[in-house]
Image 1: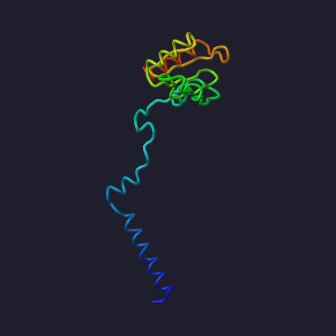
Image 2: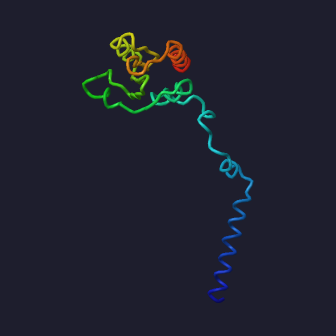
Length: 147
């Protein structure tokens, strides 16, 4: 066999193996054809401060979302350090380790804060006023997500 004949034979053999492998009726091939599940299909993914902001943004725009976790998760906060803090112009969403920590944070910030499970919403009424209806709707949506 010449080099060219061998190359043709090898190419044909590889092509045949590829075709046989692709036409398999095994469950493995069907699993490979199934598209990956979307987040909705996977069920309720755990909430984070970031996903809460995404959810609340579906009701009202929450501009300039940024991760400020470094301002609340230092060692000086001890057991009450935040897991994540996403700040927007209208509201900051704090994610704490425990419900008790979230309550402490909300109590510290007074009327401009509210606690929902392990989350605290801190409103910025002087810098980005929301009307009472908008704030109430955002609070209600948060309650459906967490409480």
